[in-house]
Length: 312
View (tube, rainbow, N blue to C red):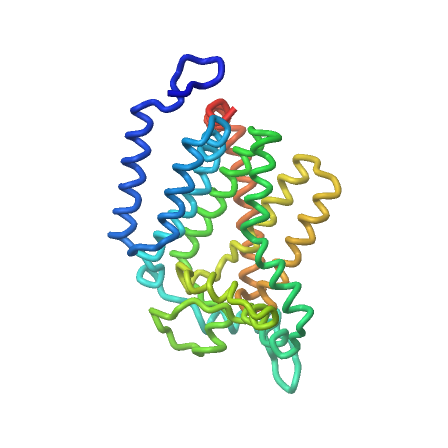
């Protein structure tokens, strides 16, 4: 057995192998039972096990990123507990509220910003918007990877804040199920429980590049009626906040540009109303603020330090 550098503790301890193996098998079996088999589940298990056993550095890396893995699993399991079974879905009321507050008068009638932008879309905006929308997960994960190697305590704070904001968003999803703008475009105000997710305006990016990127992504959507708040809009706010906190200089301009680009594309591609975007921004601000308060006034700080020592 190999050992940790400078330690007599074996790297491949038998109890670790047994525990990780049991957790992997349990995850695959439980997932199959709950939501059905998906090849992504196998990829996740292979990735985790591969990095866990590859080296000391990769083990600490995947243990640190287990926070994001937990988020991904919870998001995936939402398929088994649709929010429309818990609360009534908001379709017409949200649409009319958007039109009342942000309506644009054009062509002799009042349009939502989504409808107006759909009528005035352009290939260059389809391309740029598609690039921005592809960054909503890679940018936070890349930033997290940078923090892992550069500032581990900030990495843990960022990761916990990310998951905390998501938990707030998930709670709202079940309290206020909401249809996205594209749903009204294709289905009107009639509630159809088993509607499949749709790339909406992002399909123009696929057609432009003769690819199926967004079509494939939205084929695996967990819940159509989870438009409010827009967590797509929350994530870049968290990145910008921690980028400023980490004093990343010009890189924060990149983060800020990506943030605005995602906000615009969310509306441009008919995935979210302006109200959804504002709710997502608010969700991020509240999540960051509450997390900082908990960090200052509870034992959360000690927990962060303990986690830092595990991956140090």
